[in-house]
Image (cartoon, rainbow, N blue to C red; front, side, top):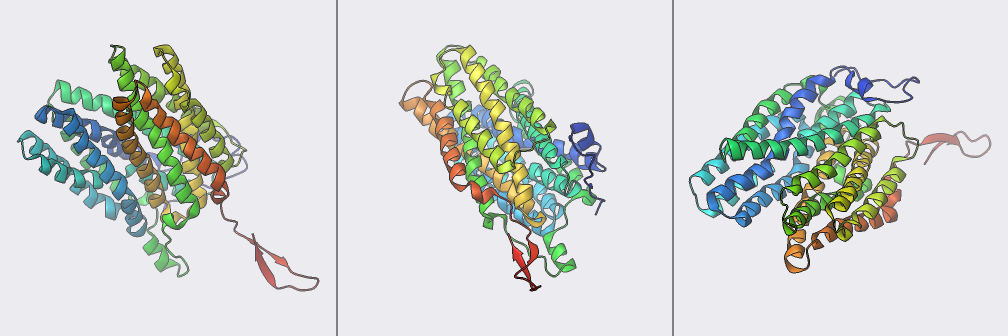
Length: 428
């Protein structure tokens, strides 16, 4: 294993320059970025190809949603296997399966195969999506064990994710509209294969598998991340973050369509994403003194307040301004949630924990897209904005009620019980 970062008294103000100078970081960052780019291309590339071959956005959306739900449901199990047997052991066969599944889905769509076959192919396509983002976060945990740079790393990963979700859809759209309707999925499969195998080849930075750790230390026991109460609270809270992404995608599209300016949809969503990226950069550069569980509650409260104002916006400028504020509040909540995982979860279960949170966002987004679409069709224009409001308010109530479960467990200390009595007693 590589030499871990050792925190010193000079680490008063962590910064991105210091983070990126961490020994061996670039060996997994560069291939990791290539391998996680397809994550943001898959959904839209599927929609554009299936819509081209079937002529139906409804069918295309249903096939794409199948990949999203499959990914959300299977991602935690991928993370658990990676913790147990090592990232490479899971990533290599997963990358090969995903590449084959994407190419099969592409061929079926182009050959006008029966509709049910597209749904069948969409399941392994989504289920085998490589969870590179959580694996990168787990590697940072190994490199920065005990360092104040962990918050900076969480912020860096959040900004990277957001940049990916801005660049990926643009890349997919350009390929599918300018080259060929299948070019998006073919490129997604190629990047997954190349980036995934290069990332898996970086053995020196991957966390030690819990099975190997157990063999080296008899007292090490693998514990599922889902058994930790704080992780379960974070999973539900991250569903609320997913409701913001999904609800805004639908509601913004409906709003710009209603005013006869559908092209503004990209501008408005880009403003929202820009707020997320900028606040993520700032969040990672601050040396926080507030406890992370309190920071999460404050950030999520601000997110709920700003998201609750979306439905009332009646102009493009006002909606852009509120959307910018919503995006600004999302990054601190995401970053703090991922930071808490490092404190709540032992190293042998962190990849699984990160994939649970990533899957929760994806699942919340898929549910929000469905609910927001129904609200837009059945109620009034802009009703889809009620989804981000409802999802975040419920999450805030949950965090306020169960915030004690987000407190990291005490390692305990020994004290003497009674005068002259030297029996050590463990106390919290």
